Image (cartoon, rainbow, N blue to C red; front, side, top):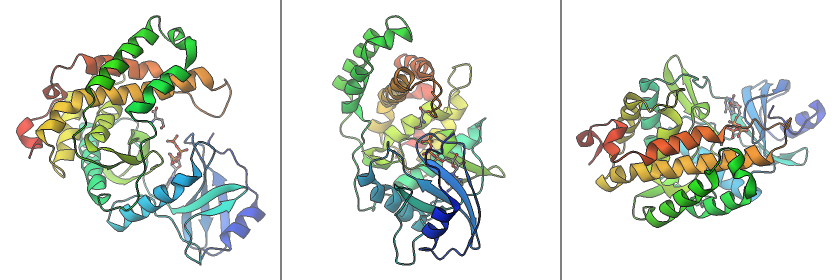
Length: 326
Ligand SMILES: Nc1ncnc2c1ncn2[C@@H]1O[C@H](COP(=O)(O)OP(=O)(O)OP(=O)(O)O)[C@@H](O)[C@H]1O
Ligand SMILES: N[C@@H](CCO)C(=O)O
């Protein structure tokens, strides 16, 4: 359960006194999520989310995250909007943790994405990329190509417990990625974790994006590659080309891709699979049993990596080239 920091009603009421949200009516911890403590608040002004930032979020990055959500919301992207205190602050402190209050987004994430969901997510991702273009702050991706090998090395000598020969296979794949990673593709601010649990739908329509705590400056098409990995595989491990087409054509309907971006999709998908396999592998080997963090299976991303390694051209992701390029 993702409530690491307990708060008392008295603490919360005194925190809320800095805001124009009326009196506290009720609050409860939210079980979902693993990074931060989230609470559902009801006050006289409505329903809100209180997020307390835990250790894995770097305090210095908070102005970037909170500012980005504000920037996107101002440009019509449906995402949580930070609520300001009476003196105009978006970030405060509660129970020794940095905290912020956000508007509540209606909707639920979908456990069974369809091709229509994928199309909507592609369009929303491209809309987010476009809306973030004039955001004034930068944040380097702390989980980009250069960080993968140190992360792998920090997993130590237990990697082959997951599968015999895995350490050598990762080493070889990292060498390929390091030698061939594309450099000259359009870059900007990406979400970097736009998985199904971070996209809400309401009555079949996309109602908003949440969890911008991996957002950073990186290749725009890398976000699309993360989306292909997270949205377009079936539970049996097969890639669904109809979903792939939906995601890519949904994206390109808002921001057409360049021919170079299309050509780079297979290697970007290999990199995205590597990134999520490694963070999951690290957690698998290092997070103690019975802790709050729900461990996700690194082998899911190993299987996805193998699929992308066998892709000879981006056309195998199922889209019509003429429809997605400029
Ligand atoms: N603005 C919001 N409106 C409605 N619900 C929200 C909002 N923000 C967060 N939630 C709820 O809180 C849950 C956890 O939020 P979030 O995914 O941001 O947490 P996290 O700990 O950063 O998670 P993750 O494990 O994905 O990194 C969400 O699944 C959702 O149910
Ligand atoms: N989306 C990530 C976890 C949260 O960042 C994963 O599925 O591994």
